[in-house]
Length: 411
Image (cartoon, one colour):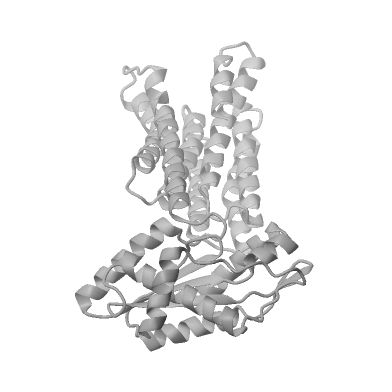
């Protein structure tokens, strides 16, 4: 829209009617571009009422600006068009009030009502009434952009600050121009000065896109792409922080390692899509069974780790582990497949079992494999997720297996 605005105004000096049409296209695309900027910053802009609001604003502003171009032929229609600018946004807001309402919606309604009143008062003013109407419409559009971007990007970053300042300066152009014309007619500023806010906004928006991309990349670096849970890197950081907090307060913190049994069999027999759905289902189940202060992370292909923050005791941790293991006994329906997996749980408590993050994880890993092997020997594993050949159990690494035997001997 802004590019089309520049192109159209290049042909504005052409003789009528082409020059008038070029001016109409140039001023209308400038207003519509501002409305689209504003709409892009509206939360829940995919709501039907938000789309209706955009349609109403685009149509009423285009109609009014078109009438200004053909004045004085359409002078009689200016007042009804100005009334529509204030009335239709209010009608959309009231009609959708029970289904959706937002503070920005009422900001649009208030600005549109103020613009409508201003136009009715000054549009027929002899001499500069039409110019004031042009500037009032464009000022309202870009001041609305500044308000919307300020509300949506309430953060102290270069992109947000530059974009908001650019929109404020852009709106200020439509106040400064008539002021200079009225009180300082001898002052002449080149068009590049008036167009400068456009480029400021462009730079600000590019920075916003870069900031959002960097934030997204940071999220991907610290979270599992499939489940959205913290990954191993973020988990290690949170485990270290949890231990430090527990050390300062003299409290306990617990680590649970949960390894899904027979997950490879689900993948091989039902497909990787079913396995992915199972992992997401397990992650959501775990999140729903722990406190908001606790951390649930996916730290391996079929391994989940949970940090239980203080206040926490060994009995509490064992109770949580038993509850989660029992939950995984329930069958899970995924499309045409129904799967059921069990889990092996290893629990380690700070400071009883270890005094640092790595040692605590090793202790929990040893207990998890010890429990898995004990269940295998006793024949207590009854999980048959699908009628296919049971895959061999994953054996622990030699070092972990040796620690498991030492722990069993000590016990």
